[in-house]
Image (cartoon, rainbow, N blue to C red; front, side, top):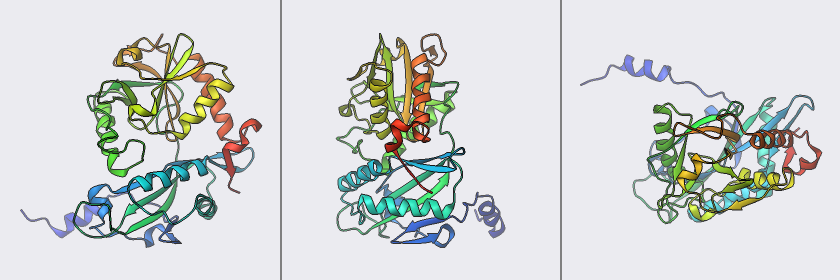
Amino acid sequence: MSVQTSDLKSRVAKRPKHTNSWIFFEGEFARYHDVGLGVMTHALHYGTGTFEGIRAYWNPDKEQLYLLQGPAHFTRLHRSAKVLRMELPYSTEELMEITLELLRRNEYRTDSYVRPLVFKSVEQIGVQLNGLADSFLIYTAPMGNYVEIDGGIRCMVSSWRRISDSTLPARAKVTGGYVNSALAKTEALENGFDEAIVLSMDGHVSEGSAENLFILRDGVFVTPPVTDDILEGITRRLVIDLIRDELHMPVVERSIDRTELYVSDEVFLCGTGAQVSPVVEIDRRKVADGTVGEFSQELQHIYFGAVRGDNPKYLDWSLPVY
């Protein structure tokens, strides 16, 4: 069956076009539309890349954009690249300088997102990591809420299991590994839920499709340990400190059974994208009374005060851009 050229052109025309913002690619600043990647790029075909997601929060009262936990994210990017036998040719300090310059060039006055990516850029067929050229880029874009953060979200336990560290390194942000997340999230959405919760291969709660998870039971917050195939979340670490320092409540890192989700007093997901997102229902069972929990709501309030530069106790979390 032949396809008319006019039909192909009409399909291409319908694709949304990214703004021609500044990006950083192959050692220099360039415009988004001036950068091209070959259709045979290794990472496109085999998922051989690793990335980070970093938020920058706009504070309208202070007319300032705050880059959250930049050094921690770039340190993790270096570690992920090492796992995939990739070379990241910039130090954390250099990456911070590049990112700040990029945000300034794009002149954001809204909450924004920074995406650095290290990837195998050789144009050849063949599954391997060694001996292949790497490339590096950073692009930015405005970004609001990834999931609902006010009224709470409804989750389902996915039939898809979390990738095991012995199969694909869960503690590294590998681009190909997010097919696992996409399958789980899609299943949840198509079944009428907002988000998925995935179990490890041995049946313990691991995380959301792309978020870490906390439950509250009998006055104790519990979160899965790094050995249950979670991503070692940067927001997770910040939240653990907030629970202990601000709520003055204990946090335990241990395995969580699926049915513990159903009898929890509170549940929330957290991450760069999700921020702090309370869960009000799991598998059509209400979490407690089905409303946003008291402590989750308080934690969320403290978190947003910190990331937007309104709480002087946590000014060291972020770096002002302007």
